[in-house]
Image (cartoon, rainbow, N blue to C red; front, side, top):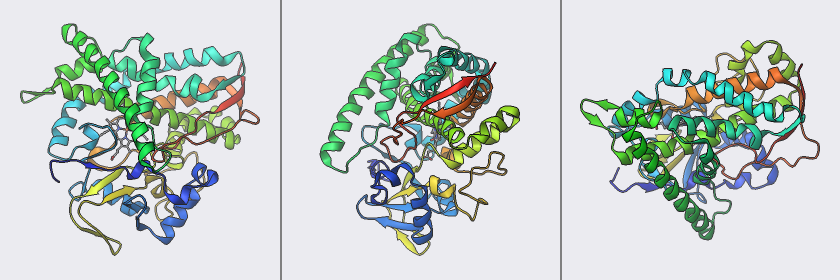
Length: 402
Ligand code: HEM
């Protein structure tokens, strides 16, 4: 790959097959048809390859020697997600020192506390806006706490992180320019803000990720300030909307299949497999992407060096060659080797955190509330970015358990 990073906008442009409200909201039947009719296809409009089968998506994500992550979208700078080896390994080993499973597990009581506080606030009223009241603040507060950001700045954080993952509605230069302008501003403001936090932690280390990143060292190599800042911004961009969508998508399923509410509430040991099934069934990230490093033949198609390849994990997760009865939500599905957190060297670093937050969120919701229903006449629309899967608002009603 040349030193110049490839700009790859394909994943943030909706494919034409999803151009009606209905198909955009429920893209899974469309993925299913594409998987069967053109499992590896080139889309001229988006200028990229789309790959739909489990086996191929798995291959593209695993084979980092053939498919590079060195690309950027809109205003991104170099970060872990967009690095190839050997840089990726050096950086991932260093951040692993701060982002350890123990560090995540230690957060469990704090996550429970935040969850309880958020649900206490709405309990009496019998209704809530699932996203604004719960699924959005929970991950933002957790990441803000992890980074050492004071509570009064959380709302600013939410706005910055949302702007950074925003999609483009129309495939037109003006639309890209408008989003790019907003993203540059958000990125610069967030970076300046985090640079101040970094300085504070350098003077006075705390028990947070920023301090651990400053201290992390392997064979005398440490992260530079700029690397710490880019990584912190990546945590916000990669961890907030995804986890918000995981929780909301789970609540959507609980309201779409109400019998599950009783079943899981009676047996909370089902929550971990339920979380995995939500991840498989409604994946918050629909499709990571890569750039071919050399010519590759996949199912008789020639993918040329430099071509963009979009790996549709959302389609792969419903491939009948891998999952039995793939379009059914099976709360205790096992095994469940979905690809929602990716595969290979870029496997989601935040997966243990996202799983923990979702587990606590569903346990608390199902213990405290019953008869969860989506509010009558609510307008439920999918969020704008086609590489993500979530809804804009999800107002619900419920009864409080005694
Ligand atoms: C990477 C999904 C939550 C941090 C990834 C990748 C996926 C993903 C698919 C790999 C992308 C690729 O291969 O190009 C998700 C989903 C989440 C979630 C579905 C929630 C349900 C989080 C959280 C954090 C996080 C909570 C951190 C607080 C990261 C980082 C990477 C990553 C740092 C880059 C890893 C690397 O390149 O080595 N995530 N993520 N994610 N995720 Fe997550």
